[in-house]
Length: 103
Length: 131
Image (cartoon, rainbow over the protein chains, first blue to last red):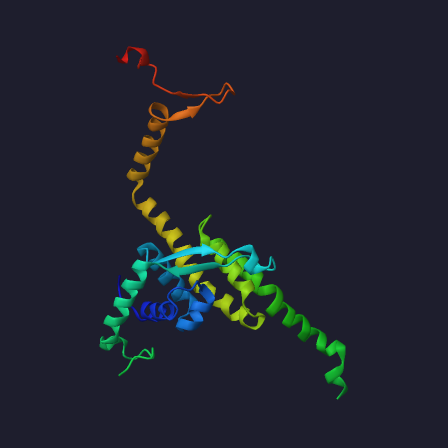
């Protein structure tokens, strides 16, 4: 998969809580990526099998709003994105991203 | 001072706020998601996300979705159309395959209403003489 700034930022946001369910809007805020860029990234991650998706239950929404789609990292995704982040850490292209890496 | 509290002066602003933060985001988003192909999960996803966020954030977020729906919804649709238009032979071959396949190979529901399945074979093939 092509390494882009958006991918690295989304990977960082997903790995900040690897076992949690992530929502599209919340993820775009955490990652600091526009939703116009983030949704295509999520589609790529889904196609690779690095994340899975699902719909939240009725109990969570309280029937006040439609159920949201969530994204969850798979085991493969955790290791692949972890590797991607480690590689990006030493990559000069991604030094500008403020992801809390030690300089 | 009285113009600040005049309800008539405040009415247009109230209506505008109602439009921008209440009606318009949902309406525009529902139009935008129609750009996605039928059955695309993104249609449901984006509408659901809208109602989970604060009203103040909705108008800007919906404006962002114009980009998303153009790139993920509309352009792939055009791409498929263009590809199809560039390869008319492929289309006609696919149609022939579909028609012939339906005639020779496909199983279809019986029209006698009993729900039995039977095979449609061309008139020149005698199924009993296969052995």
